Image (spheres, one colour):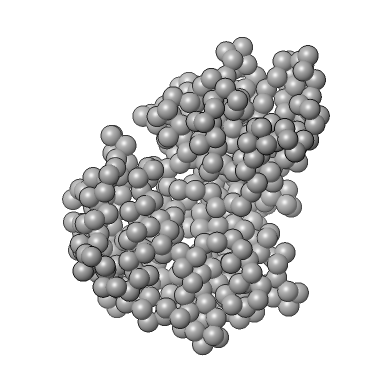
Length: 426
């Protein structure tokens, strides 16, 4: 779905108005007499982007005459929308979350990479990373991060590792502490675990529809009803939210003891009182019909992409820059940056001690090994989120599944939605 990072989203015009000092250039965009290559990245990445530009031009002197600079700070999950609004005003090179690539390609807004480039990136970053940035077998992105996943953040002064090992223990403990757990079952980025637990699965078919077996696997209705009943029991200890401020403040003031959330650790820790600390854990087990089932979660990649509307003369420098910005060398740099601590996609980078020591990324890598992650870009389209959100909303409403009257009929409604296709098997 989305990268939940709360970052400033500024348009090109807005940036000019506030006079952003662009990386690799000056506040007015640098030396306009030089050929230009422009970049969009998140606000948090400005410093690292400046370093990447500097190092790139030192390493590749053929491109030292280019004015390479950031012209916009846009969250990776919003870049496709901004690109679509005005492709000519968009940056040449864009940092984009993987599930934005599909829509951008459908609108013919991204430059395709060649077979040799795809083969090279498959070697360095693996087939999954390449598949996440590919449409119809054609690669459109240079992967550089593999840490876009929701995990469990908990107050380890109030909860133990055993407390967060199961949903039952976690919510019972929160209730006993007169506190709550934030788990946004009304959001499709968090709630698919409910159906995965029951044996449900989904993927994109050749028509880019969501092929889902939910309505044809009896276990899905069983796990959905189990979650419905569980929420009813622990409603007082549950906050259905993925709002940054609520979660940051809640973990700070004690109204929350845990949250299923994206990697907002830096902001959460900055808000904590001195006596409080938080840790990161994988998703717990959930009891379905007397059997504890380990919950799974989405995982996504982030990529550098090149807009299709780029001047043809710039394509060689854009490709060279993207290749360098996503290289093992630079992924290691991002990984060891104390502010960023980004989890790499590069296979060699993942094997470094620095990557293994990253709290967030190390949990994701362990979940990968245990087959507890699901590839977001390969299984969803823009029609995924609303039906799944509505389904979770029915659990939260505790209205006997609303107009549907049963879990199975509520599930049937999901797969009957636009952009979905009900299948018997995946």
